[in-house]
Length: 106
Image (tube, rainbow, N blue to C red; front, side, top):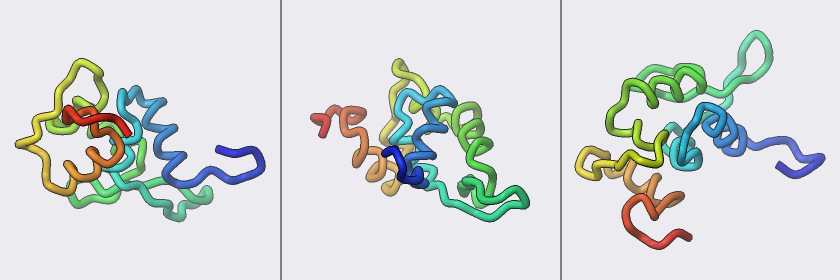
């Protein structure tokens, strides 16, 4: 975030993923595709998880704890099983962290 410039949705999502312990926060934010939505307290980040709109923090916890396909994004030791990823998930993750698939980092 630049001084004087507001934080973008993607920057905020990456920061929250880092705080949640993600080893690859850019990939987590890319896959969850967060968006801002109005709440009683202003605006908050939300994500669509299994067809349900949930707060972004809850989406991070669900991905980390209950999604065996994407939970390796929270550990440097974990390995993604490419066979289990959807084509969209593969494309989004490869776009920000190609090294997870044995490619050169950008």
